[in-house]
Length: 456
Image (cartoon, rainbow, N blue to C red):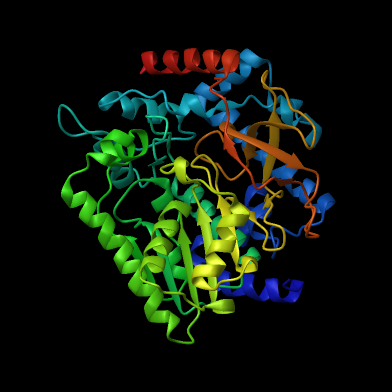
């Protein structure tokens, strides 16, 4: 386990590499303070973390209440205003937005009006060209003309979550991802990086945009999915096994090339003393290990290797294995020990992520700016060790209300059973919750949004 001095050195190096992501100290908001001040976001003493968290979240809630008309009207239907937040115990009063509401957007030019409705703050005029713009046409217009980083989810449910990040929110999200990763892993100086995800210049998927910083921080970064991935392509790939099975030969060939190139990469550096790091969804890393085994190849990276997985098994649920079994297989095939295999729990709606500790593989939460909840079927908070719907309040979301009920079922523990990092953690096993929508809050929210769109 790294010492505080080692973590501080890592953070200092990270800050040097991402200096342009950090606003001038004299302009810091309480949310900035919660993110940029602590050298180790995951080891802040609880009292200090709660103080930073309260100031950051109250600031964020006040901002959205003041500058986001649709969210202010939503809060009024709930009878909640910023003055009602007196302590962290009042956070459950903040009206949540079910993630399903962020998928119920219109298409074409009406999507542009929807984006402006959920955006907090002022936007310059955005011109959507063409009579029938595609989903990506609208997203790209906002990114190119308004300087935003609008991104969307993979579309597992058949519809994409869409969120408009202004540049400040986007840079904060990037920095948070990098800092959390740095606090959990000593791979900042790795010689080579393999990213088995779409390249950020080739897609508006958050899995791509959210890792933009990688090439600025890490050495020799190789993206294996360096081709254009549209929203339509992502949605089709994520929602229909039949469609995937009937994919054109060019798509199948491209998939084989991705695996073959990754196999060559592993074999090349296995023969050296260089250090490597890999970021991949488990299903794709599994395919690569399948190919290595077919070739009779057993790598011996040992402590030279770092594996970070994320995204779960959304495309390959039939091949799902327990996380501990997957880590054992990585050690058998790649020679990388379990303590150097960690996982990211990443959500499109969240800025930063929850990262598993190498000691026990529980997901640790950046408590200085993010407040987690577990909700029952009536969307009321439950205690520790109970399963329910994961929800969170994200103070870094400056351009959209980051008060989200997710579609994931989790179990939260008061503290990690294995390591001594303070604060609550999530059990490593996370699954999709039963299809239960936000009932009252979702209905009310949709009505408020509909009124906003009619007004435009």
